[in-house]
Image (cartoon, rainbow, N blue to C red):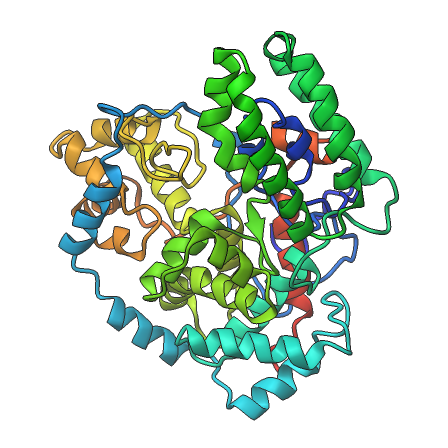
Length: 482
């Protein structure tokens, strides 16, 4: 996965679709809308870029052991107590985050504001970033505002990475295109794939009278509206209108259909899961804002994320914890490969690269073949850790028989936080693995296969290596030494 590695040219470039496919697919059941969370123009690159500054020699592929799985969440007495337990564990673990912040600032290449503007303006309108020259100053100001608002140092590392992520995720659009305008008819093809998948999986449910008539009426009304949508916010507007109508009509549906609609209706109103110029999900945006001391309703935060400043601000807030922790472990003059970890974690989920390495340790110690996917626990529909035992939890319990499963579970509740590496459980895993197998890197980039949702969205399946290839291209083109 280093820069010189051959790109995956066997896969054709994928269209710049967002999450519109599932709007039709959830007209009745609302079941598929929650699966599509990938964003950005995920295309292969054939530019044979050599790695001048980005040398990812410590990055190891883990594709042999990597799988993805969806497990239905279980709850006790209808309630999920994990979020409360997580807050208690966060208060208990003494993580030296202030020390991490200080060490990060000592390791990065800081600039004064004038130099930062000059540096960014020197490349973000060129390939591969392609920021509009007319809008360049506005985007530079938005990036600087976000970095300053989130109390990060104005440094090349964060400025270059944020500019790269904006370009990859939205092509410098505050309200991104719903579909690539250069591909006429591609939106319709995507919607047809979603409809076929819906009928394949839920045909019996949809065949119950009077559902066929309702489906035909909804399709006649909303299909043309979706095809006319130019941006994500327009798609969300149609989705909210549809959700309101569906909620009223659900009173007339058979009970088995009505119960599903009642359960999933909020997903339909929020069908564009990743929003704004940095394509962040509300499930990640809300805690990032809350941790900073800002409270938003879902509607307020959605509106803010579709503004130029807001989309970048929220994205940087979510990026900050990974940026700090990986900088502390890896940043040094002339070595910028750690930015791959930050960028991939923005794509995978917080601290996925760090957690994949932990799963390798747990796998080695337990002898169990667990998924190396960066997620220790199962999660419910709201993204909260679930009480059901995960394979990683069971393997860790086997690897550490002297630590209770409940103690390991509580530590794993911090899997998406910088605090996890300061828990007794992590320290025990690291020590046991070191004694038996030797030293390991802090983080590793694995490869996760993207199946059903990608097939509906793009008409094919692929792996997240494509995202790494894009990062590889952008980060190698960045003029770090200018």
